[in-house]
Length: 319
Image (spheres, one colour):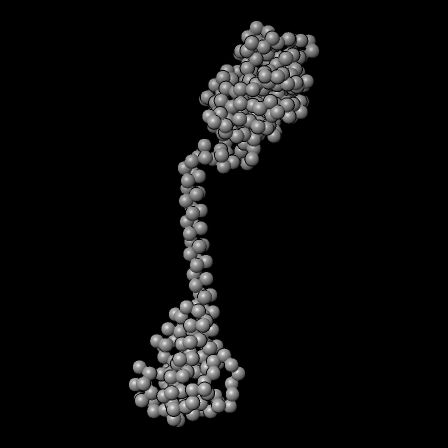
């Protein structure tokens, strides 16, 4: 992920050659290997950035709204050409300026007599990594602007400048590419913390709903299995309104059936209940089948139960 960087590059100590008539200041420094913001630029990052700086437009001062925002026509003073890499030093180029610009004379005088009075400040998108206590720029992915500024040494951090005008975040010039997690963590840790807390609460709520849905699915599946096993054993449906049926498949028995560990345990409970009913009714046990196709004797058992069993005696027997 690329993050926005702003760097100041001073021409202090650089032998500048000024051609006033042609409007060229030769040998200006565009980017060094060590920035005043504590970042180091890898040699390969500088080399790959050459075509990005070639032809870059130069404006007077930082943009009034946000880095990368549209600039006023009167701010444009020139462009960068002939970008080269100097090993162990940085990027250098020729600055072609408009000799008719209102600040052209002042720029030329400063370049000849006081190059520390003016310098370049660039806004770029770059891929960085932390190595020990240093932030290393591994690649420059986009050059957003190059600005000609005075007192540039006051530039600090990412898009910070002492006494800089506040950024109008409500304008259409707002750059969404500046909104990265890394920037938010640095600039608005309170906002990141609030968003993280809200996200954690939402995840907890969704997990609770998922657990409830899973439990409901398990209960419904077990109820369906219980009803199937009861039907196979010719035992009454637990939802029957018949008092006789409710005694055979009581609420307590049905709950124990649902609480059984697995299908095998449920089958054993149903078989035991079916054999108990057959024993009390005085019917042959082999007539009770669970999970098999019904036979003629099974039908005789079911039809015989209501007429051969004394209800009170049956209840006393099974309880």
